[in-house]
Length: 155
Image (cartoon, rainbow, N blue to C red; front, top):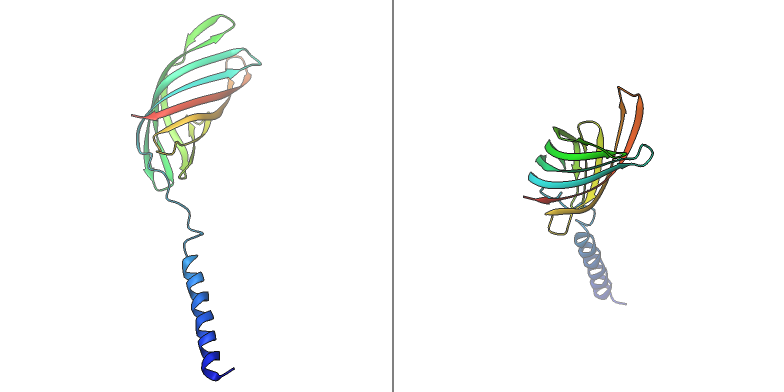
């Protein structure tokens, strides 16, 4: 094999290797987080089967976002039921420890309830979120663990 042919072969293989490296440059870069700042209407159902308590709430989350992190607040109204007795479940509070990717989000509300959910493809809804509220009632010393199903849509 002549010197010129060897040189062309090395140059050609070297060019292929460089092209392969350059084409893979952004493979490990994660997608940008979904833009979720603003107001979201939500509904949720909470249930503690051990103590037979259920709640149905509606409200609004307002999120402030900084890249993949977010915080905000919520306002809600709702009704809970415990063995036939109904009581109001209205309130408001902070949203903390929020994080979002391009497909999922998670956050804490009032330091009591943790939420997680998958965003729709258009990033305008969560259709089947889950969560849990763990707390101790100071008047009865009972530990409640309420399972949450929730959804929200951008306003």
